[in-house]
Image (cartoon, rainbow, N blue to C red; front, side, top):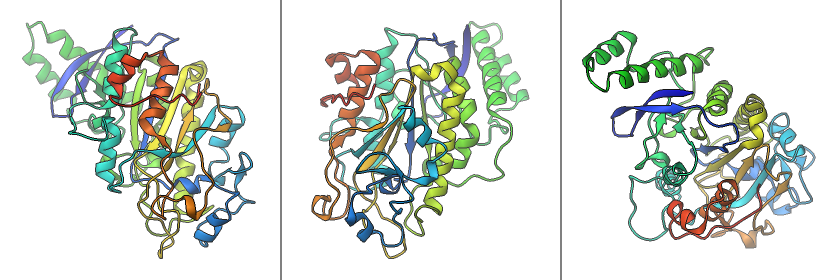
Length: 393
C-alpha cells in the first residue's frame, strides 16, 4: 500500500514523501536515545561489587532489592514488570561499559558525536548522521522507510536520504491547520505536485489522529525537546503501530536523565523514570505483535555518570554507560561485551565506568547481523570503525 507523508529535512523545509507499507519480513530498528545521560549503575546494578555500596551510601540499590541477572549483575526493581520479563524470555540483553571515546562530558558535544557516528579524529560533517547513512545503504536493497518521532529531524537522521518526522508532543495542535493546508494545496492546483502535496497533508492528518488521544496534562521539559519518559509510555503503542505497518527504521529521544540532585535508589526520581521508560518499551513490544520477532530496539545515552554519588545524593557527568538491546529475535538473557570487575582501580580517571565497548563497533556488529552488511557497506555507515560482533542476534 502506498502512502505519502510530509517530511522535514531539519532546516525548516517540508517536502512530500511517499510512504509504503513495509514488507512483513523486513527488519525493524528503533533507536531510543536517553538525552541527559542516565545513571547506568542504578539500572544495571553491579551487585557483586562491594565498592558500589561504599561509593553510594545513600543511592545504591540493595542486593536484596535488585533482580538477579547473573553472579555479578542485578536489575533495578523499577523495571520488574517491564524489562525483567523480556530478560526472562531471552529478549533483552545489556552491554555495560559502552559508549564513545569522547571525554568532554558535555551533553551536546557527546550527543552530536554519537549521532554523527563519524571518526574520532578530524572534522565533522553535521549534515550526515549515521542512521541516515544506514538508511542510504539499505535503501538500494530493501523497501525501507525511516521516521524520527521528534519535533525536528535529529542529527542522527540528517543526510542525503529524505526522512519523515512526526512530533509526539502537542500532536493535537498541528503547525498547519486544515484551512492552511487547503490553501497551500490549492497553490499547487494544476501542477504535477498537486497530488503529492495534497496526499502529504492527508497522511499527516492521519498520523496525527493515530498518535493523538489521551495526553498527560504536562510533560517534563527535556534536553533538545526530547519527550519525557512518561510521555514515551503514553505514545509507545502508537509508535509501534506505525513501525509494525510501515516504518522500518525509527528514532526517538527521551529526556530527563540528568540526575545531579536527589537521584534516589530503588525508589525516587531515577527509578520513576526508568519505570515509565520500561513500561513504554514493554507496551511497544506487545503492540508489535508477531513483528516483534523482526524488531530490534537499541537504547543508548550520551555517556554514563560518576560512579560515586555526589554531595547532593545525585551523580554527575561520567563516561561509560550501559546499552540495552531488546527484541523478539535478540539473543538475550545475558550481559554482552567486554567487562571488567567494578572496583576503584578500574574506574576511568578514578571516577567513571570505562568505555570498553565502543558504540560504533557494537552497532556495526549488530547491523551486520541484522542486515547482512559487508565491510564496504559498514564503512559507509561508520567510517573508520571496525565492527565487533557481540552475537546479539
